[in-house]
Length: 329
Ligand SMILES: Cc1cc2nc3c(=O)[nH]c(=O)nc-3n(C[C@H](O)[C@H](O)[C@H](O)COP(=O)(O)OP(=O)(O)OC[C@H]3O[C@@H](n4cnc5c(N)ncnc54)[C@H](O)[C@@H]3O)c2cc1C
Image (cartoon, rainbow, N blue to C red; front, side):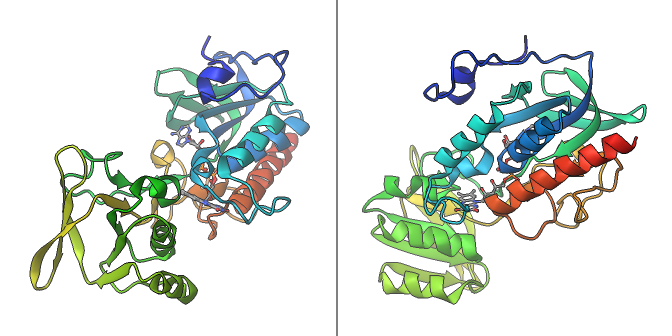
């Protein structure tokens, strides 16, 4: 049995009725639809697919995706304010109304074409076949790739200011990045940190309202034209080395927030579907990819806005497109 129990998967309080039975995952079956990813896009696709009675399998690293990291969601219609975790629980409750097998905690390693259908292989080696596939695997934070970064993740190096800012109360920290997520992180940190260095390779290209807010706090020093060369520390981050045309300079900080963008989770499909120069899956307005029968939705695609409400909407469109395709073939 490949499925994990609800409790094991989420390490959270049991929120659904005990009588809900998990559906078994079958390896020798040809599913109508395999959905890769259970973030907002994947979970919305599940609900639409279930309502169309598609025989669906979901395979995902976790349930909730990046939204689990969002502390304040103020842009999801129907809720003036909700935390990302609460919102994802509500999505999951809705998914659980339907008897759909969910394979959670396993990563897809390869998607390939297989005799007019598609084969999806997971890290354990098991293979599943589907007549259609929706790629809804989202994205992950980009790393700086400098010495000390990997070693000090969780010990001062963070990729999520909204999640970790309170841990840096009264400390000096650095935020690396030049776009809106970086200045948003700076603003999140002004509530806790003593001083924040905002370090960017080029001058910060962001919403001026956010910059004004950061300046008003009186805690932020903007350092443009610098790269980060090293993160130092024995047990925890102690300092960073930054460099500009004049040479290296050390800054004593207890935290480093890396906000330099995100990478689509699409390695498993890179040889199958067409990607754009940002390695996003190219889709049209019906979520069709370059391969007939493979659809994609959410942050993994070239859809310009990376937001929960957009990902959910695209997930719905992808499932309905898969349904339309299946009834035609
Ligand atoms: C810190 C933070 C705060 C944010 N705050 C907001 C906000 O306030 N409002 C807002 O609208 N948006 C916010 N966002 C953006 C929002 O979270 C994303 O736009 C949204 O989660 C995208 O949904 P998705 O389903 O496309 O992808 P994701 O949420 O990335 O979900 C992808 C899913 O695919 C799974 N997966 C990945 N690779 C594989 C694989 N190889 N095999 C199987 N499964 C895989 C993952 O485990 C995950 O379940 C925030 C993002 C972050 C990081």
